[in-house]
Image (cartoon, rainbow, N blue to C red):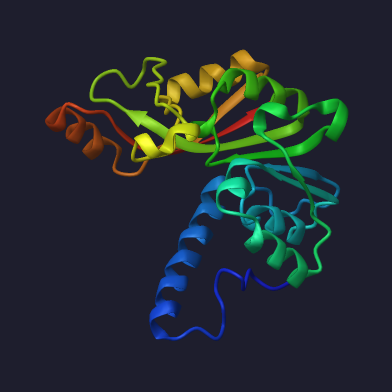
Length: 231
């Protein structure tokens, strides 16, 4: 597991695919820096909620985690899990995996974890507070949440969450989303769900430009935010 993830950056690609894969790799490297996952996870157990292709699951294993459990349902149902299984075999990985929805996580069935990753998942949750309460019971040390956050022009400090039809009605909308919280809504939900310490680690890029665009277009904008939460 000492090598980087070649299933994302294949070494035998032609020039055009190589350019695309280099950009993907650069994006993931940046995400890793911003997420603030501990460099040394020796002795830690990790739960990757919404693992999809398993990039962060395998990365945590590479960083020395004693146990990593990858769970997903929506992505593995809709897009399949061929990439995850191919990488799992290629790395001869010990990462465990279960076909579970975030709303089905049960501490009595899967146990507690030192680190819980919730990356690109929150805005898919049909019942976000209920799901976060389950995750709070599972989290021993740290939960890292990365999600789209809402950027309205003047009400960013209010706990707002617009509602969308959700994953089950993707044929009726452009994006398969349930809701995008303002950063205030996200942090308050985490506290309400059982986390005692909530730290904002990253706010959306070009935040004030997007707020200006919200004023011009009369529609809230969004960007990625990262929060660390501790029980």
